[in-house]
Length: 419
Image 1 (cartoon, helix red, strand yellow):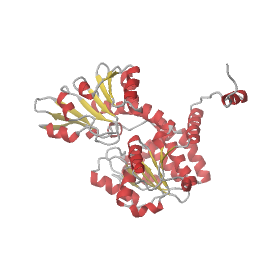
Image 2 (cartoon, rainbow, N blue to C red):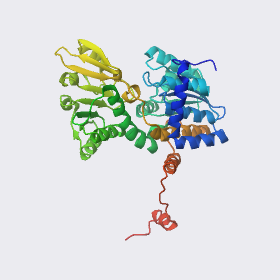
Image 3 (cartoon, one colour):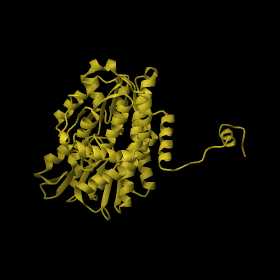
């Protein structure tokens, strides 16, 4: 293996130890890896993966490799790469990696193209940058592709838009929509890791502060829940009346961002949309407000507007930029508006990524078996895969559950029984 681009191979030993540590908390993926090692369901399949380069992702790459796949990995965000993990994958597992934490935009896309040079049969994406680049710039490679998977809400939105326009050239499984992914990864993983990133970056106390959570999807629910548990006063902003109603019924204040802007001490965006925090919101914020994004792309906060408004910008802590406005107020932006949990911390705990990446591995196996039957659209993870992952996770946790008796099964499938 000659092709890779990582920061420093001398970091590899530390990365290997952290990969092993994460693996201890990923029992479902380990079970899948053991079966893949025996059965080789991905033998001869080339996979190009564009994912956050973390210890958990490393264990997914090991699992795909154990199944016989020829894997290449590139980063799905310029700030989310763990350089020691990238080095370890190259040095100890002979998996080509193209990722350097803090890489500029040109290098980021150069790395995506390097992963596409692999001429993949399966794409594995987190945010759909790999898929969109393939469709826009490398269409000559589309004939090789049998299918893909997508890890995150933002990517699924983009892919469904492509499918609706008739632009999607192959079937993609929306791993994000699996119950064992969004119920757990998005709610509990994002809920914990977002505050991990914010607290590491700022060392602030949440108790008694007013936190504004933009978006009450599964990620927003998790972030709001954890902020409440840490003693914060939580405000939720939403555009969806059903989600707004749910937030209100869950005990949170709900209002437009324009009303929340002068009240908040800490703002977190999790919507997947553009300019959720905009110029007029910055104009209303109190001195010292902290603004962070936990959505996939750094577009939810209008950073160009903040840059234009500011008379001074200083890096006051790692991952904390202080923007001084003409009236003397300071707005603090975390991690350059990128995913704060992966930029300023380590992302989701391995225990929850265990289920998300089990979905990735089993979806890749499903594509190899069924791609010829699938249309060029976005599919959800098959329910039997989702439920099997939940069952394996329960087993690993030492939890047993009831099973239906034949009498109960018959009752649930009948219509004759009444009062």
